[in-house]
Length: 107
Image 1: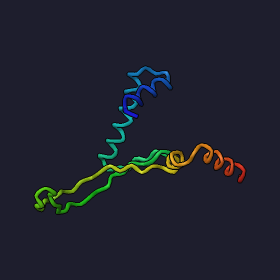
Image 2: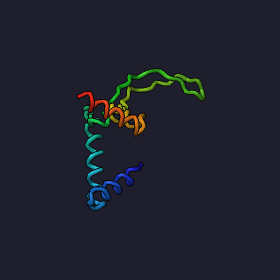
Image 3: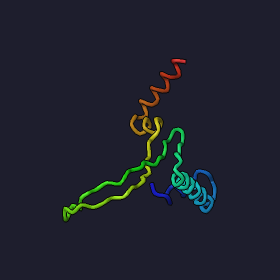
């Protein structure tokens, strides 16, 4: 799914104009980017979390020449899927329904 597909889907499901849906999606992603730039963790319950992983500098090799190259420090955004998202992706509908029934009956 692309960003423009997400915007159109949001507009369709909410009944909002595409311009408003575009603004909502842009604000959502800009908020995540801003939080990560500040070094904050972004956690969306039931979906997952975004964190920054910091890597120290190291000496690498240029694969073409074999020459040593200094690689500087860097930060990479990492997405960790939440439990509900993992279950939804990995389990069939039948399995999810059975687990819900088991939980419901256990109460």
